[in-house]
Image (cartoon, rainbow, N blue to C red):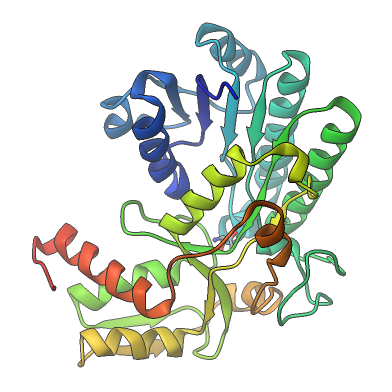
Length: 321
Ligand code: AKB
């Protein structure tokens, strides 16, 4: 498979930063064109970098032509918390941005598209534990309903036009290289910075709120593995359930206290609690395991150690191990 000329849309975000690094290491910096709505000196230093608003279809098309793109990773989106603050923009960016990409994939006969979905596509009537691939989906956030619409669009474009689109329902993603923005699961990244800086964190979710989570390294591996999987073996063209681990803020606190014994957590739940309450607590990803061999590497203990070690180095220059 070619996979030689890649365009990343939304490369400056939490996933995009790490995915760009991983794809440039694999394919060479010059073959991976990073784009984002904002300037990004770090990404511009390791390969081609262009400013792009995915709602500008003409500019998107011009970049595809200029760089002879065959593969797109389209990551630009407004997430759950930001989406509630600006629902109209969330609809426009998340749905019309994806439509622009799908239409150009079809019209230019490009080879492959990755587009992330999320656990936010599920809702209050979805089974909360071990949520199956197929079940009731009644998302009640603007983010969730745009992503569910996006999943249906992806499957439609695959069936009707043969667009080779691949997708994962990401859980909350936890990494140390780039900070998240605008999500409900973001507490599980911010907590590490505050634990190291002040020994205390005030969590915007209740202590017993279990959510599906994953280390960013696992998410990047899943993304690249799915993009390299044999298309014949893929039974899902909407979006695959994907699971790493599930934990509550209380459980994460206990793990952090093993490394910082004096660490304390306060709770001040806000509007994001209702969002978290509408989402699954754990995910059944057996279809991904069967179809393309998915297996996560990190558990909660490994994730906590890895985050602590790397964020400490990042902000203090100190090794814990
Ligand atoms: C969010 O919290 O909005 C995202 C997600 C689960 O898709 N991290």
